[in-house]
Length: 155
Figure 1 (cartoon, one colour):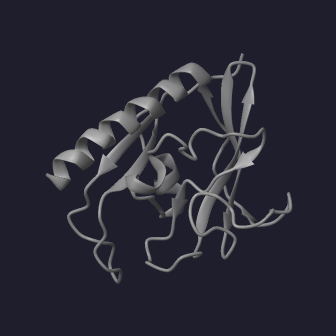
Figure 2: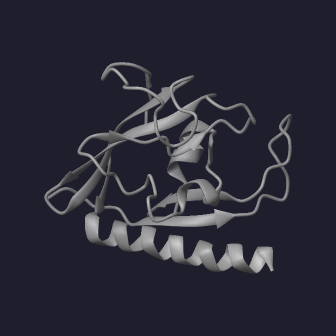
Figure 3: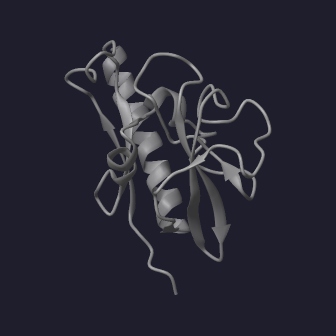
């Protein structure tokens, strides 16, 4: 049996934007066993929770082999660089595998066109394996928590 990691989502409110970039709002950070391994490996940031924490969240793959952009360049340009693993459910587990970097293929978490299997630059991020039940429960928890937070922020 493969080692499964604990999956968690955290909304961060950055005090300041990365050097050379305009200020940004809240960002969703992906934690693997409590650590932002993807951001640390790539220098990229998570999407706004408004973009990814909804009932049709891209974090809940709808097709086998979905490739979803989970992090993106900190600049404000649409279509700039993204980190997009392939997500695949395998016997009660959700695998994030074959992490790749793309430019101009995504304008949000989902691709704007079909992506050839060997396109993009392969990244040195290991395959991550999550218990499917724990993963889906965490996405549901994060969606509910963000709804509450968004309501408080707009009040």
